[in-house]
Image (cartoon, rainbow, N blue to C red):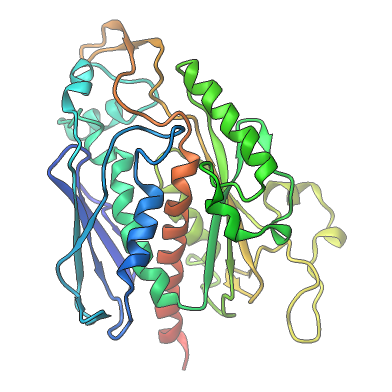
Length: 354
């Protein structure tokens, strides 16, 4: 299986399956001498872990990260940083009913057809459990980035869309509620909607917005390695993601150039920021902001028609412990992937200057 490594210089390779003994990763390319606060790593792991509230999956995993190389006396050594996260609460029998059956809108069918073998216990390698390794690595990347601030938050659940501009938000309030929406009035509506959907045995999607501040000018390349292209790839690699837009996004397509152009100030900053902090694929020093769309979780607690491995029609109902809405737990994953992209481009930018 290919495609387990992300990045060019600051890289992450992940391993493990949802119901295996452990998942984990190897971070390579992280410079030596970076001070690492493990409490910050554990904080981000707490934000992603299952069982943290009534509106997420009730699988109980502590998601404790064990670092076993690359960090000595609180600093990175420049060698590969190896870590694992032990799986402690697998209930593989919850998936015995899909051993020979394909779940609608899951990777079951494509995985089986491509590899000829399938770990049906929670989806194996295709499970969102893998993203715990990304969050651990992203927490290291954040500490390498130092002054760059990355804040993601939920800005919609189903048809409930937060309308408050991000410039008016207090990012310190993101963690003040279980849905991770910094606007408390919208957060209450989102929580009620998720509870309603869960009670009906269904699921619902939503969007996560991410704002990156204090980004230096010059990250990214103008052709195939545009900064926004790599951010898009990073976000679209997250389970359940169906869309990515940055800056004015799709709304910009309905505007005129005279409305959309970001006019300059004398210092090179711009009066508006519809470009989303990136022009020509290169960061311009303004805030980078983007939105990531997540589909409804495919496992629902309702009967659905499907097929088995022989192509026979059958019926199935979801079992086990699943999120009715993935976006609250996706917030730290979005931040982590953004941090990995920026850490990689910071190192690439050093090598591009003569």
